[in-house]
Image (cartoon, rainbow, N blue to C red; front, side, top):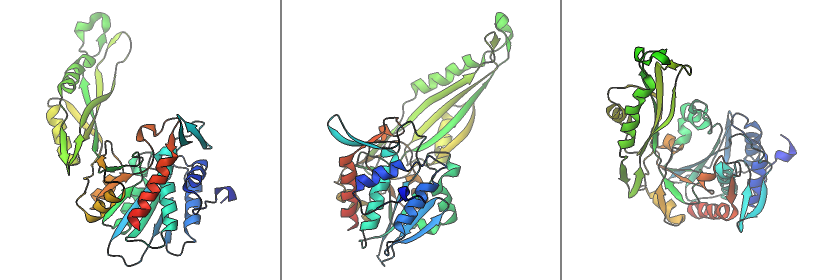
Length: 359
């Protein structure tokens, strides 16, 4: 490991964030950062550190009656001339600009800083820093760790450091993608009556989508808004040929009270009469705000909590019986943007809240 990759976890958390950004870690290329994180955590006597591929796990074992799991992903989407990091004023606000500043190296910086400082805490803690979150689910380091070492996920509550504007976003929506395939008959466009236009048949699908009224579902006092939308249409052979095939791709975001099986059944009802194939699906996560550890966390972070619109890895914890929330600095709308940034004030406020909860 290069000396330039050495991380000082006792440094100011914002300086730590900049150093994390400056160690490039595009999905599939997290080795350098995973090495640096492992090396930085290992000297702390209160942490038992282990490596699983490019996933680094650090655990306390102080005999507490409860355990919490706190996780963050190390990878980013590809660099867009936004590394190294820059600290500057933006509209009068002190910010860090750089790839991963928001999604989610700010959250990782908070977690690493807290893991090092908290030599003792009210809960035993499992810290997980994982790879390949920004790519296909089959590569996700958290998914692979859950399959190989489910014991490392045992806990009463979990926190994922995804950007949430330094507020608590509980649970997450489920997601499902389906393809609706329409078949026609190819013909020369000058003799259109001899064929059947598959693209025209997509009109009925689009009409059903236009008339569809998404649910608003109240769970633990939080309103989850569903959505059903066409996200892609493909078809056509040439400019003078009646298309014999058209595929409409639809994305369904559903409340965590609905299972994947129920979501599929619902879509088959909505698109009755059409050839529907599920291409991707992941369950949502219930907020679990009735758990004592969750209530303590919400109180420590200011008492405000909202629903998570979108899917995150909290779903993996929920599937293993561990309620989870998203909590991290940065605006999720800036994730993956070329001008991705994180307010300095949110990095400090998240760190302070995490320390207050765990102490």
